[in-house]
Image 1 (cartoon, helix red, strand yellow):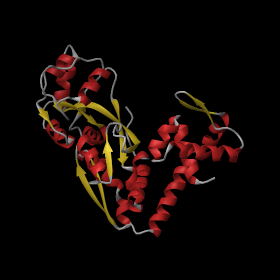
Image 2 (cartoon, one colour):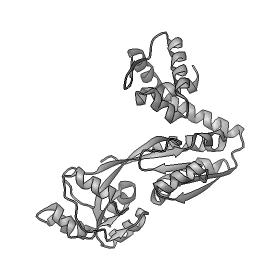
Image 3 (cartoon, rainbow, N blue to C red):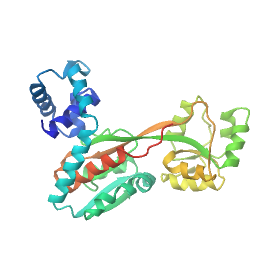
Image 4 (spheres, rainbow, N blue to C red):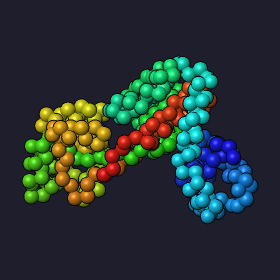
Length: 300
């Protein structure tokens, strides 16, 4: 059994969809179906039952998935490393995404690429900017905090990140002491990622709280800037725990008590299928998929 066919099987098994697996792998649906048919011939049993909304794994598929476990990821990483040693990996790789995520989460996982002579360029940009750069070839890999919608691009979720409401300890104490939590939040300055306030609104809705009609005091797309203001005692915001946890541990920030706790936000690695024809980009993609998906994302 080839690693490619096993990878196809795992993707179909995870997504319960031939078309979804094809998009994730950058393959055509007929190619995915051929891989599954070849595996079914090898194991001697059907692996999936086709339905109108996707596929359901058979008992044979569940057994195969259990046997594989994490060994496929290990094998792919080994093959990617072997290809890297036999190919010229020198050159530049361009990665674009949210500045704070690139710096705090992605940068520490670039060391394996740097060790084989790759040069990395990190560029901050919002979702629309990163999509345009990927489609236009201005960057090789992108990081999104939302599922990709452009049909010319492919993506794979790399982690779920917990997001919680935080403030300086004194501000968090004032908010918690209010008779009504919504009123306590409304009395303090609001710091947000964007004017639409997607993170704050999602957190408020998750906790059954009322959104303030006031416009944000500060809008900043690099959350590290908001974090600095929060630590100085200005207002409250919703931040990812990869950014807030160190300051909470040092007593510079405090989590605002909430009825239902943190929310989870998914992060995706995004690429154009044609870019993977370059061994350097294909290797960087696989290295980051491995490093980021096995990272230390914090549960709510």
